[in-house]
Image (cartoon, rainbow, N blue to C red; front, side):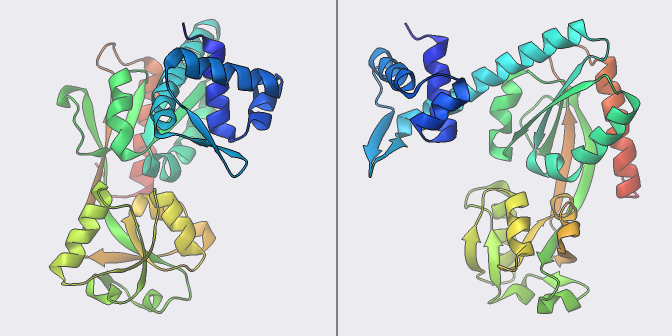
Length: 299
């Protein structure tokens, strides 16, 4: 039978990439890591790693197992935090959030929350929008902040914030002189895009198609935060939600309204299997207050 130590060794190797680093992470020797991985492969009947050019490379089966294992370990972390919350007066708060929320809103909300509740322990799990549904199914969160639409019962959903897309660019870019940037303005301009198939990419592609523009895509990046980082270095321009973009203003990123208008909605989701806690109510109160101040006009 599989045991937890084998799975810990596998997870450490996937996270670090080498048996030496995996051993250091777990505080054991390299031969022990190798033996645990070998036992795991034998007992599971899976080929998890192949050696290429002197390095171990994960197989597709390893990637699938790792994704599922991360959910399991997150559940164990949640249980650990829950037990700590029973012991500590301050309690715990487990937040699940997609990238724009994690980068653009939660740091300020957590600052306010911690200032008034110094004994509160906060755990944040950040997920890609396309993976949010699987994490929501675990119900191992107190409050979730995700992109909308998403398949979740409306009775456990609250409106949160609604923003438009903006065109982002470095400060020395010619488009920075414009008050508004249109899809047609981006004809022939170096562009950083989300991967094909993502909901954001579909929105932006449709805007280009309506203007009969074929974007000059130089780079495709996984998240809006990575896109903002790249644009700030001068690689090109992009179109992202305003929440993500604002988080990078300190790096010199320039924001301009984008047309045609693209709307991004974010909602608060609550667990279906238990009542909302007092701590969750306090968190939501702080989150709404911050949004009302940062985006006047939001309900």
